[in-house]
Length: 194
Image 1: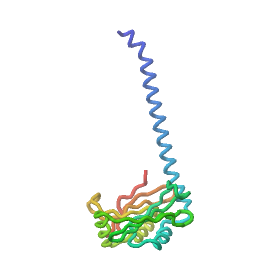
Image 2 (image 1 turned 120 degrees about the vertical axis):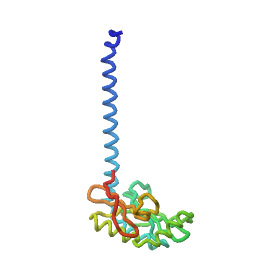
Image 3 (image 1 turned 90 degrees about the vertical axis):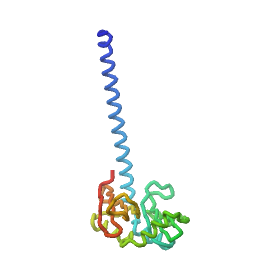
Image 4 (image 1 turned 180 degrees about the horizontal axis):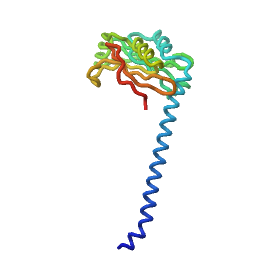
């Protein structure tokens, strides 16, 4: 029995070594792919000619209601270099407008009816002390970055902050995620996006 095991030891060792090297190589490849994806989002946001605030002004001319979210999408196939997806709501209607991030042209306008959950969120947003534009200004002033995504949230994820804005900011070569309380303007839960 000892003789048989001795002959298998190099084979087992080489198999373990092969598995370990393969796992390391796969991990490195996945990490590099993730970095490339992040870099492409950062690069696209950095090279966009239209800011999110400018896109909101453009979209506001074609929509009714209150601004509830706005985001940069670098993977949209409707525009090279990305689009801004901007949503407005009234008590019953939702408007989603896509604006080309390089030309400022409106690409699409879609409308739809709000469901009961969206109506409740809309009513809560209307009562908030800080609207999206004020929350963007607070975040940009505090971080020195530029907002590329913002969305109103009305949930119980944070005990002290049931109504807040979830924000992504472009700051230098990375994206910072943070939240701004919709009633106090307090910034909380700030971190670099991974």
